Image 1 (cartoon, helix red, strand yellow):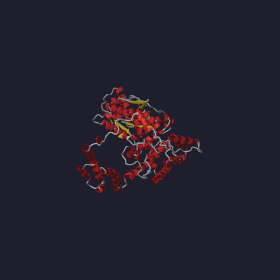
Image 2 (cartoon, protein in one colour):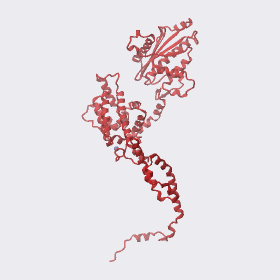
Image 3 (cartoon, protein in one colour):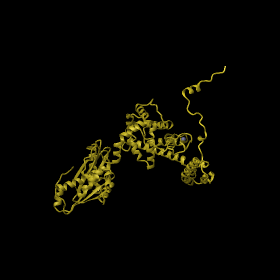
Image 4 (cartoon, protein in one colour):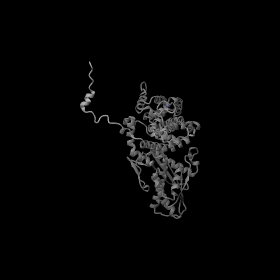
Length: 538
Ligand SMILES: [Zn+2]
């Protein structure tokens, strides 16, 4: 921090001048590092500057920006209390310029809130929000916030820009300098008293997604064990899978596709096999080919869906080329997906390959190639692609990364899987209204036939339930048939019970009319005699 003239403000305030401060803050983040910078000036005279670290794992730019504002507010607070100027007169004005509109919105929204909101403590970076709000509301002077567009010096020399923009450039330079030369990764965040509480899990301070992080910490080990048992993975195999990118790739999908992929990845799709098992389907056969049991794997490998499979492989090839994929990775991935779609236990030969691809193929063989569709890629894929990005002169490593590459690949695969699920649902439920109606009636038909089959067992007084001939009943719209089944089923059950009890009441059992054949069971000797073969008459 640059504090060359610590007395400046005190002198200016005691002189009774009307003061307007300009404050600009900025933050920067890269991977697991973060930093901030700020500058305070009166007119064109820079009085104080500061730069420093952003604490927290994978802080991100919003947290870095927030740290900048917190630091500047804390400095002013400490300055005013140290020099004992609780309510300066005349009141100075502080105009704060920030290039993050979302930070300004968040501060103003919470400053102007007229009610207490206990759930705020679950918001991301709540520790910084609470610290900023506490200090600002207790400062002896008011701060007003303004937005300034960042990086305006990209096209125009700094000196030619308005003074406020120049100050924003200075703050950006301070933050960048700290990020490049001094920033270190941090797991523990110094406690901010205004936040009231802090969550640490295994030595890491949690700043965002609190419920998810708690759930993961509490049930993560059990889920790991469950996945290893279910998929027959050893712990090294489990650890060789990249679990980070699929969860990010999931967020690039629409909500309905996300739910479908999560169900598919955990074998919870409502396939015909599953619905038949829980007695919610008439058959477990695939609605497209009609003769193979419909498992999740069969949905993608059904003989009737060869056009979809060819399209998936063709468009995936295009996506891989577009995303500058290492050529051998392209070939192996396409071969692996083709193999997994034709054989659920497909294993790829690692022979005649370079060492790095031998280890990739072996690693994915252990995980299973069908798991590629569920997003379970070995870390070797990312390592090889990252090396390719670094060494190929035609690829810009500042805009490309292996994580981004895998995200694009997963987005493509999962979008294609969702497409085939839509096709499958159309096969099952029909494509247009007429076909859907016909499928619904086909489903209801066995229920109607079963109900009509009871007519001979009913008492005469109950038989009028089935006055309408079955042919006419089946001609009605599906909704009408479904309503009739729902209403009539309990009545028929009751009528069957009545008929049975009437039968028992009005008919005598046959046993009393019969004489007992033998008074008591055979003795052992008699049993032996019974079994003895009759001697032949010679
Ligand atoms: Zn099929």
